[in-house]
Image (cartoon, rainbow, N blue to C red):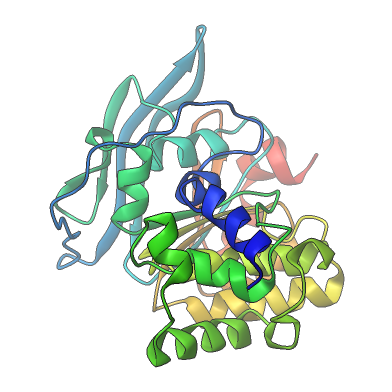
Length: 292
């Protein structure tokens, strides 16, 4: 790594967690300060995420209306619904960007997400992938993953410390998983849109997330990139819990494999839930979403 790149990384590594947890358009103040004292979610009951009666209003408009949802440990859950259904607001609540007016949100059986700040929620193992990729474009693919390692977050210590053999192996495994091993030394800004999406997913994986929230991950991808992304997500199932918000029904079909639960949101509530074939045949879903 050259001195210029190390300086660039040093300036930005302190922002890294917030960058991947915030939308590209916001100017919100970073949520730093409190550090969790070794809190670990308890998944003994098999539930990774539980939302109950979540209500969020903006200037009288209810973005979420008594939303209740449960995602099991290791589950890959697809969330579909028309624009304005509340999908993004739901993710904002889970990650601490938005505080609900009513309801509860739990990670495992013991962690109240509504009492935590955004950076603390990231620390306990919830990672969010936005539609627009946010990577360090002036650094290489390898350097992006190096910065994302869940280790000493002090900029200088993180950048100048020699990587251990185990860390190098982990980066190599992640590069292989996200289909970017041949691109390891390529500048991230030169990657295709789909490759940048994979890189950001890889950066999230470097932080050992237990739950991944993925917002329209294949938007703008080629057919080949979309197929590879489906393969990637299916390989993560069971090792991580995944919530995928998506409009591409072909992609949803590939992910659900005819056997996984799909949740349909409408006007801030769950409209229908079941196998993809079941929700596609639901007259209410056809009327408000699929029939449009």
